[in-house]
Length: 243
Ligand SMILES: [Zn+2]
Image (tube, rainbow, N blue to C red; front, side):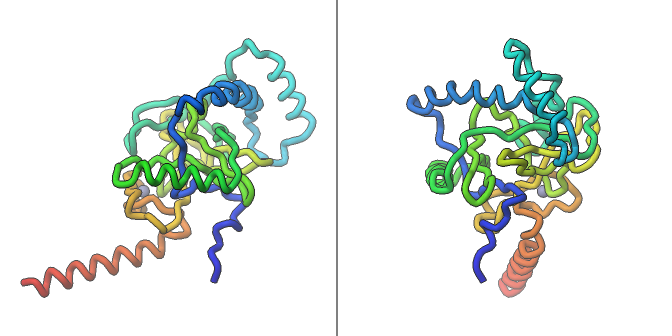
């Protein structure tokens, strides 16, 4: 069987190996340039729960908002804070209804080749450290987004084995959507969707009752559970024979 990796175009996943180049002097200039683009983009944030709501009403709203460049962003649905899971996290600032686009995951758009190169560079750099942060997101079979940029607060959202949000690609952009009604103050989470390749390097501390202890996508958890059980049995057998 061939690997099904590329087929999943509707569900964006963080690349397990992914990541970002640290901000060198060279990277800085292009960064500021892109910042304004990203900021402008963000003003088009919509709350509609339905993906079909891309009609005239929505686009009218968009142009209206974009015409006020001096204005700050509309009331934020989220706030940043100290996470109980890992380092920083994002939290619901208000009650968020199911289906809401909570935040867009923005960053540099990369070709697959560029995404791969960044991922490899980052892997080299962080090998053996606890820097589990991965920022390269697969948008579809052609594009990735490198979200390790200061104007992408969505990069602080932690993984959970029982997440309250999920990423969704909508017309080539990635939005973090509420999977259920979220109460103000709850930490926002989604499934990073990592594959099984380097699962041991990404321990999970999400605290969910169904937490498997490592950050892997839901579809891989049954297999990982088998691996863990086998290991445990082997360890027990080794301990017994050692007595
Ligand atoms: Zn977990």
